Image 1 (spheres, one colour):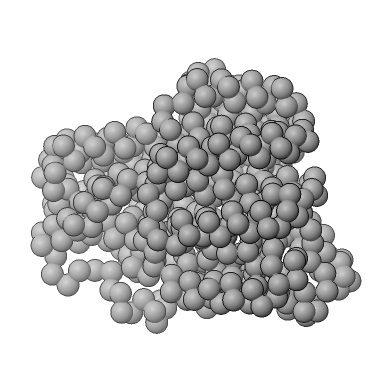
Image 2 (cartoon, rainbow, N blue to C red):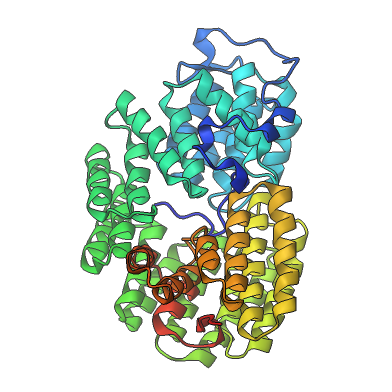
Length: 511
């Protein structure tokens, strides 16, 4: 399992990306020192160090063990179990900041826990020096501006360059920020310390299909090593199921999902993963059957909404646009009633993209923009920022398609402001591709290509990049972008548009 909300988390402004993030000492970070000037608690003795290396403030061995179990579960995609262990730790020691920080960090992979995040921030003056850095990193990745998280991460890596858990957590964050090179370096370093370290093997598997130069054979090789390291666990099989589907091996995908469910019959990501695979195979009746099985084992409303959303998309794949629009509208209402902004973003962004007319799409996008402009329940600030950037990027693209250049320019200015304010790489990526759309319609194709190349995980942006490189006669660059697009294969609204080429949003921009 790798799934996180599509909006991701955050990184650093593009001007800082000339070298790997974990090695950067940017001027912007100087005013955000990572180490508190007056730690309230002295560093604990060796017996009170997390995984034997990182000093923590709690005096309870049982609490430390709970937290180690939580982090181990988190690293292997056991997010619900990780949360349970952190909750156990906080009951035993209500003043343990790191337990709340790990709780909030794990919860963002399912549904945000703002109460845990607030508690971690309130208690951060009570932690030990190394613990404070980890608290600052884990909480900072969820904030609207990530400079403190960057500073803490760099300090942690400097102080603990041989702690495989620190290397993994930092690498995972870089991965979700699309700094695949930086992530791979950190995970490779963790494997040098422990060649069978399961979480690094897992994420390297994803990195080699989601990176800018996909290598599916290498990806699958890492995941097979992961499965060998944890033969009785479902997640390695789940990861193989997902990555094989991305790589186009649908039969292999179904087989590994089935194996994950044999090991753990209620492993829900594998159950709806089978629905996703059958959708891409065009077996829509079986896809619905798999989604229905997943709904029966869902344990929270967020998973239920996601599965119902994927099932609703099947209508579009089989050509029933009106049926799909009706189901998505109903789901949007449910998400709003449940105050789940993350689910509402997922649903309404797809509703907008799949609209049959430009006016309808714009109305949905602008309503969603309003929802995401302020703090949104069910999302971290980082997720909200990235989601809003995606919405604004689509507003720009739609404006350019419908010849509203001034409107597009105004929205690009909004994106520029948000990118500068947040120092968020995902916001910056949306800003760059939005500028690319404007440059394309104005005839500056070379500059447009440069900008679109900064957003290579948005299928519509990559599709536009391919067209421009072909117009420029850059055959090799066009083929490279086409290969990147190939490995974005997931049953999303964007993938539907680039493969089916239906609707307003499927249009390409040309001058």
